Length: 634
Ligand code: BDP
Image (cartoon, rainbow, N blue to C red; front, side):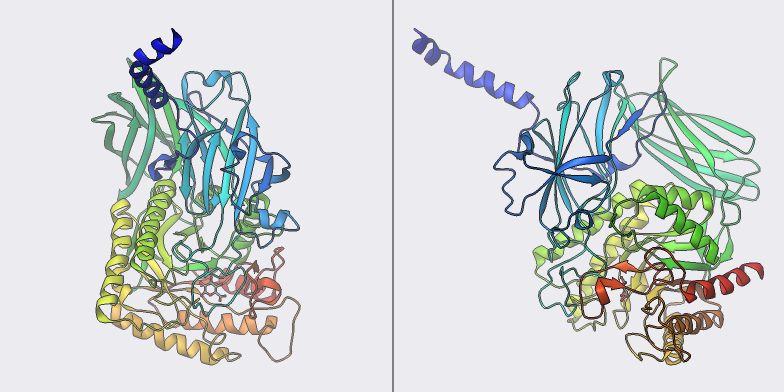
């Protein structure tokens, strides 16, 4: 009887089962890919939105053989150890410093009952380099790329009134097709781990992991504020995207005793308007004035979602010789940096961040570049408030154009993804005045010193690929300058595409070692030539000398604190003599961890003017004297 029934109804059963399975959330192995737009607004708390930070001690398990998925580790880790999130695994464990393969993270959390009618998301702010997420054993999504967040909706995966297991598998295998590249065949930059860049490839959940809720009826998905001004009136061109189908909303701009409200209506989820701000307070390093911009969505006259961000009104421009902020020339004094600290590795370390801002200001610096990747978002909030100008850089460091066409197009795709992720996330920060789409791109797999030895066609193809990055950045954000940073002896033709000529130079260190005077002379000659050819303002975005703290000599010698001062002085003098040099960023703010290499004593780059634990070398005092004086003479 059962047999017969089964056979008669087997097609019905089959169809029913198919429907059931397709209505269920995705299962292991079936991951959706993170969408860059989903990170446009960071999680906040207000009456309509909430967030939970999952930082703390998680369970962790190494998976050297990559067997975790086949053994279903997403159903619960056993024999795990404990790890701090955020933080890099390389610094926390005694046996994992150079481990670059797979690692599994797991934690448990409850979802507040008050979120029952909301859409619930997870946001991972940095999983270097690639990650997959499971919630309660069900595959949610995956993301490739480091130092940028990704987010997924979780409504179909969570338990109410029971705890939820969040599992994240992170992997940091160095590969030539990735950005940044690693394990590059024939690389002249012999190091271990074999990264094609000069900082340690710290792996893991380096930034916070958050759960957040947004209203489900409709929610604000993106806000873009493009500022401008004319005379004493400021403008904010505001573009809003919502998820949902509401037709009305409101923008409220508040600050300095003024409250300006403007209604907007949505068509196909999008709205835009221009808000005028009389007697505007402009953002600048001297007056880092910020306005609160609130966007509200309403249904039948009732507010259903609201999002407030802080931003400023300022413009950025260029002439042949100058970078302009609010129409006035500005000179960028500052540093290239790293997110790097003992034990934290690349993990967010807020006391270090606060200290770094203190020390930057102590030296008289007014700017820094987020070398060589977008930083933790708190950096930009601090910079907005402190009046520090920022060059926001993608993780495209040591980018090169060698390899087969599969590798080339994978890298190009990743570069574009990074540009989107960086601009979507960071676009409303007035402190960011320029986007840097790559550091030292080259056709060779070295840390620099490469000579273009390509055919005409290959050169043309590289330039076109690069042009795509520039035009993507410009199309996403026409209000800021776009640049890349050129390597010593590297290709020059890409400067045609940039707003500013930015170069990293180490004459007097890697060439003409020990001879800072010649170094200064050579850089001066080169920069004169570049300016004559391209007629754009120039910046030296890196220059510096490795300096072992406490190493002194009465006559400056390489690695001594005296030589670092002499080197920095020679370069700053070159800038002072040239009106078209618009910025000087010393490499580096602080000593930082690198892979092991014969020219990286103890696995460190010692070009910091501060030690890794933020004690000043002589050069930090020298910069303070020089920059503080130049600030006073303005
Ligand atoms: C430059 C790189 C930077 C390195 C620096 C150096 O942009 O990341 O740390 O050289 O060699 O080429 O110190």
